[in-house]
Each structure stands twice: as C-alpha cells, then as structure tokens.
Length: 202
Image (tube, rainbow, N blue to C red; front, side, top):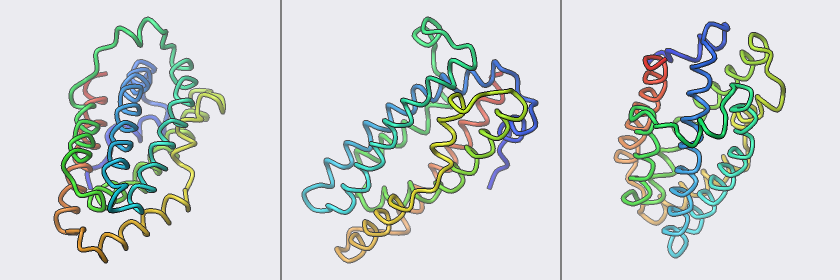
C-alpha cells in the first residue's frame, strides 16, 4: 500500500493550517456525495438484496452524522461560510466520491459492499491518527476533532451488516469477488490520490 503523504505530517504537527482547511473543505464535498450514493445503493438493493440495503442505509446515516461533526473542524481551521461557498474542489480529491457514485449506478450491491469495506480499517486508522495529532500539536478541542473521532470509532453493527450482506450475496450468486476486489483496488487508489492531491496542493 502507498504510504500516506499527509497523515504523518499532521501526526507530527508539520502540516500547515491551510492544508487542514483544505482537508475540511474537500470533506465538505465528499461526505454529502457519498451519502447520496449510499442512499441510491440502498434503494437499488432493497427489492432483491435487503441485507445490502440495510448496510447502505446505515452507511448513509453515518455520513449524515459525520456531516454534523465536520463544521467544528472547519471552524477550528478558520474556514468561513463565504470561503466554503466559494471553494472550488480539487479534481484529485473528488475522484473518490465520483467513483463511489459510479459504483452506486453500476455495481451489484453486494460487490459494492465488499469494495467499500476493504478500506474501512485504513480510513479509520488515518482518522484516529489525525485526531490525536490535532489535539497534541494544534490544540484542537474535542468538538473540532469529533469528525475524525467518529470515523476512528469501530462499528460492530456496520461490520455485522456487511458480513450479512456478503453472505446473502454469495448465497444468491450476486457476488463476483474478483470483480469486487477490482473495485476495491480502484477505491484504494482514489483515496491515495485524495491525500496526494492535498499534499501537493498546499
């Protein structure tokens, strides 16, 4: 796996605040886009794959909760409402949610479940590291770190629903694991592109 070029800098207090602000602004576009993609996947899955529908519904609910917590981070980074409204997203950062949207339209629901869950632990680890770095080196409060704390926290319920969706997909012959892992590898690369773009842009 590619070494993350930005998270270690935040962990050691070496990333500047402009970079943190850009991270907040990019996430303000990623989170609502992913939420809509997950809702669409839940809708697609509901007739024939209720287990996958339950998984994506829970994911969408999580994105809504994360969005509520993102404002504290953005405010701590000094992002104003005017800046947020005028911000032009970076293509390299938005490739990930664009591909999630592609999966929402094209992938079999169970295959999307597998592709998305492959990288959950990595993302959660990044968030835990960022939250610790923000507290230790930047003096951010719990409110400012709540977005990252949320994703860093394990979710046994989400893991259970993912396992149920994958089991049902296999039983129904609706899960091509080779193709799903191909989707997952692309998602991993697009996430790496997100961090690389942030590092290069600031």
